[in-house]
Figure: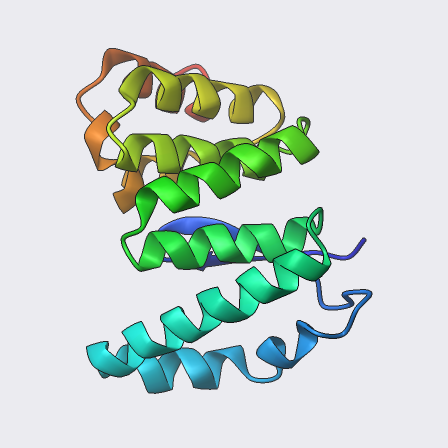
Amino acid sequence: MQRQTSLSGGRVALCDRHLASGVYSALWLAPDAVDSAFSSDPVLERLGLEFLVRFLELARVRQARNQEILAELGSAYTRLGKHREGLAVDQELVRLAPDNATAHYNLGCSLALCGEVAAALDALERAVELGYDDAQHLEHDADLRALRREPRFDALIQRLRGPRP
């Protein structure tokens, strides 16, 4: 499956340009134009995100195991500040794709946003074990702010950067 990785609200979101149902593909016609139109007005941005959540929740009913829909739904919940809902979606994604590094990374973000520091670090360590390797993004991701003073977080960043010469 062809995937594109995009950053939204600090999270890494997965989207598939060729979804089987076609019901979701309309959202990807001009994502940059939509993002720029909404980002200048917080009220419009919130309304757009609320619409997106409702749309994705309906799509989820039709395709409960569609990982792309779930990833976007988790991202939208997080951007709306609905961290517990985002966490539930990310936990479902990890159940559906236990070997997906991005799913574990997003789970770590959601856990951190919910104040579950030890579990967040466990999820991030698992993401790295599965191949996640972007130390700079990990270090600066706003969703992981609660982890920045944790020795395990520092060790994880150092692990990604590799041994110093």
